[in-house]
Length: 380
Image 1 (cartoon, rainbow, N blue to C red):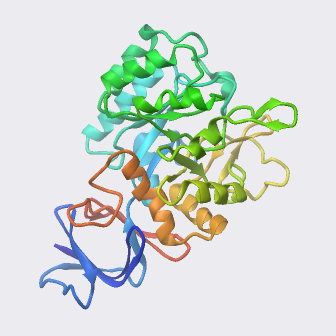
Image 2: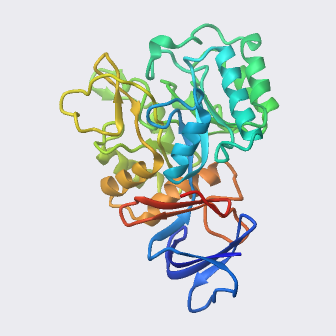
Image 3: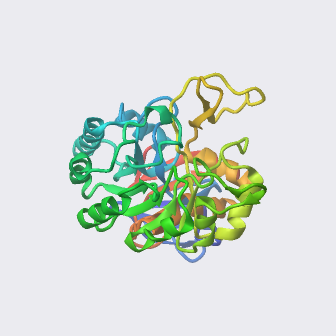
């Protein structure tokens, strides 16, 4: 048994200062104030030295570790994000990948996991293939613009069984309902997300009975708001905000470029504490910074003068979220661990509780990661 002492335990909505946490066989055995929970004799002891200790971060949507795509080197990327506190991650496959590349990436992840590598990868996030080709980074490379045909996607769905956790769709695409029904039949536990879309509220809500309960990178790569001159319309963002059952992903960069800080605070006010999910959505691009954003260390740029995703890891997103919203360490652990676990029905992780996985992150008041424990084992 291992005991963590001198910790400030981060619970869902409060702290336990000067706390002890006991773990054994990769799970949390007990926890509580030190004055009520003595350390058993013979325990290995880890001194948290007053740091916050919260549940391991869960990044449900990211493509890279900052300079390498997951599908290129899953082991490197897995290790990089783990050092930043991400004990559970869903690498995202993208619409610029053809069928063979989708199949190759899924196999590569499964093989690495089977070999005892990439212990924090627990599935994939399918950002495509059937999104609106007018939206998104590298949209000129979208290879899925043609009609939605079963023979084109059936093999991908088969390979993704038991592994795909989220599947993004643009509800306005012709034939998307047949695709959604097919995926739902083959992967009953799948969560659908509205992404890269200009769908109407009615088109989005029509897919909610099939498991649509997520808005991919909320307020990014969504459609027009103009129905009539000088009249604001309603589209994807408004639908995600309106529906209590839909979670909102947020890319929270340091400059508030992906989502303006005022908009983040508005989303927080509308969605509440339980429906926000922070994501990294890290990408790889090497274009020059846009003038005025030369110091934006956590944003990518393409060669066309536009942003091209983030260079974030989820710990940095948490730090930025605290700055932009005035939120607490407790708040951001909820957005980056508790909420994604609940959205995906992961009952074994996402908060500190007896019997849950001993996936733990030690952070300071700025959310700088100091130590990570995965399945009860220290990794740094």
